[in-house]
Amino acid sequence: MAASGDGEASPGRYDVIVVGAGIMGSCAAYAAASRAGARVLVLERFGLLHDLGSSHGESRGIRNTYAQARYLPMVRLAWRLWEDAHADAAAGGGGGRVLVPTPHVDLGPRGDPALLAAARNGGATVVDEGAGAAAAAWPGAGVFRMPEGWVAAVSELGGVIRANKAVEMFQALAVKKGAVVRERTEVVDIRKQGEIIVVKTSSGEEFHGAKCIVTVGAWTSKLVKSVTGTDLPVQPLHTLLCYWKAKPGRERELAAEAGFPTFGSYGDPIVYGTPSLEYPGLIKIAMHGGSPCDPDGRRGSSSAAAADGDDDAALVEPVARWIDAVLPDHVETAGGPVRRVACMYSMTPDEDFVIDFLGGEFGKDVVVGAGFSGHGFKMAPAVGRILAEMAIDGEARTAAEAGVDLAYFRIGRFVDNPKGNLKDSGDQA
Ligand SMILES: Cc1cc2nc3c(=O)[nH]c(=O)nc-3n(C[C@H](O)[C@H](O)[C@H](O)COP(=O)(O)OP(=O)(O)OC[C@H]3O[C@@H](n4cnc5c(N)ncnc54)[C@H](O)[C@@H]3O)c2cc1C
Image 1: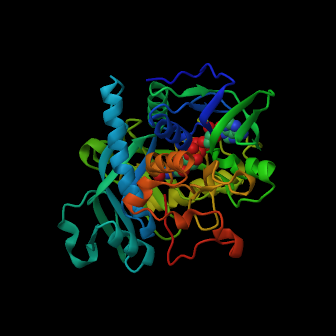
Image 2: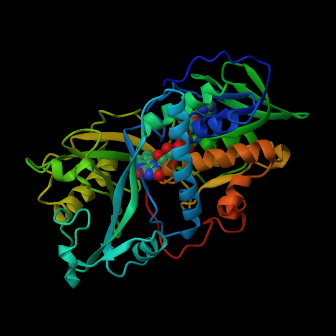
Image 3: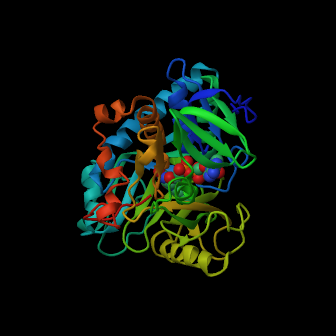
């Protein structure tokens, strides 16, 4: 189900121009193109499915256990829309499912407020090994070695999303609905000319749209600054997806087919992982966070990334120590991860998303979706739908119906408080 990467983008007027074809732009394009008669154009600066942004790689996790209750309605909406997209793709004879359901387990110190809030909000069952529940058949029992004083919060609602395939699926669905997708087209300016939004590219081409959706990931601050002069606090971070080798004979126990869960570990460091699925015998275990970077000044992608000096050591060594403490019998740390994939987070100070109208002279004609802070992929179909409705209708009816409170995601929250929304406890990917 490949999208047409060389869409015949005519200079005529579009209803919606989407800038950036990562998972958010691809989902927004699908949602916008699904509206009867809408002419949608997607502009992507690199080749489609490139690995220089935030949406590439084999997998992302989905879970309901969020410490911040504000995300629950959006995750629930996203689950439904992932299924709708599967059905739409299947109806068109497209590829298989991109979301593989698994159990989900959160681990951490017994009194950790974020862990307890996540368990409560996500309806997870807290299993306390110290209280003699070790015999309980929770996914991961006998594999995770729980440090003294730790508990596990177990939920049925987890899953692995095949990331590259998901981006491809939404692009293909958008194209099927009539969207034109143009790769290798960098947007350098967005202007308002009368009632029209003029989107200008680095080659001097201009595209005209009634509305525009900006989903440029780690490049958001740069583009917004050059378009409006305002500073949007979306900090790009360099981070790593790490794959580790299962110890001999342990491969099956770590596999998704055997019921091994997606997992998150609270405390310091915050660690997350998915069961062995995409590479047989390897398991993805990585650390939430990263180091500030310039999205244009990186060495580029690194499916084969060799160590990037201190930055990468700081992203690998704490994970190795965590594995040695929590999964010592099952995962090999000697020699480090056997595969590293460089990626970028777009971090806001409060780790909440930015979903808002750009405002100013653009009023409600330009919408921005950014700052997904390492936990946005799972919610992309919901975010895409919301962005498309905001652009086309001036408001997101689906969000309101699903109980998603968009007030938390406004740009204006940073005006009086540079740290943004107040929090009781942290969250994670
Ligand atoms: C290591 C890692 C692990 C993660 N794990 C999880 C997880 O388990 N669960 C979860 O829910 N989320 C997770 N996330 C977060 C999730 O992957 C991101 O929130 C999501 O991919 C962000 O997508 P995006 O479309 O905003 O950004 P991107 O994918 O970066 O897309 C932006 C696109 O805009 C393009 N662009 C930029 N500037 C321009 C321009 N001027 N003109 C045209 N195009 C432009 C870029 O080339 C890019 O293709 C993780 C992220 C990382 C990095």
